[in-house]
Amino acid sequence: TWTNSATLVVGWNGNGTLTVSNGGAVSSTFGYVGGAVGSTGTATATVTGDGSAWTTSGYLYVGRDGGASLTVAEGGAVSSQAGSIATEVGTAGTVTVTGTDSQWTMSDLIFVGCGMTDGQLVTRGAGTLNISDSGEVIAPYGIIGSTSTLSGDGTLMLDGGSLCGHGGFALVN
Image (cartoon, rainbow, N blue to C red; front, top):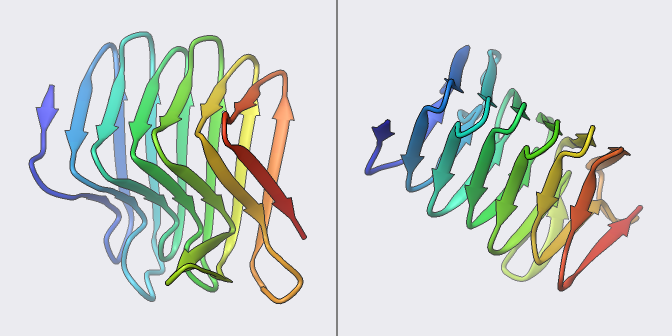
């Protein structure tokens, strides 16, 4: 178990890797997978195996800057207040949740390829959310894609997984 009482950043301004496996647990206030403006590296985080978990009390950003990926597999679990994939222009972020009992659970919303600033949808990068083989992503609200006034793009791919939202999801182009 690793308890980080601050923000956990994987791949700040370069390459980085975080693997949580074999029932391990990580907790942090906020999480960034790929986090520095102009970063040319690739950041990857993997949470895999029954009982393996990464918990953030705040936002979890995947591809905030630079390229990044998060994989939740084989019964791993990620939980956060909210999630954001590819949050800045020119960035790329991919989240894959795959396998029975694999989950990413949010108490607030998820953005894929777009985001909010001061209550307005704003341009973002290329975000992809893959959910397969009974994996689950659970959030009360979410926005996937972009509106016609935005240049970012978002992709949702469901292949035997489920996206659950009790407040609603907007799929916009």
